[in-house]
Length: 66
Image 1 (cartoon, rainbow, N blue to C red):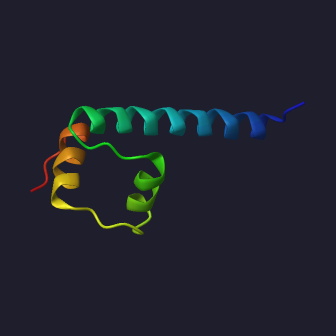
Image 2 (image 1 turned 30 degrees about the horizontal axis):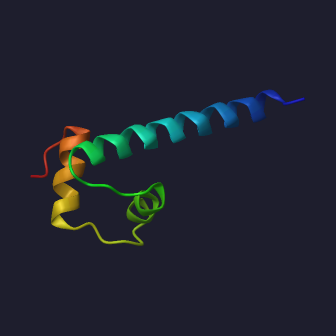
């Protein structure tokens, strides 16, 4: 039996996973095919973000790079 805290953690993890998958799909449509592992490395500053990556992220997230 799960406690309320465990249920919240599971639901949050599922939501984060869904959001990551949606972002990865948007990036792929924009021409950047990266894995969840690569996304994690970028977010944790373990992989550089190249110009082509930045352009795809900006388009996928609908933000300006300026």
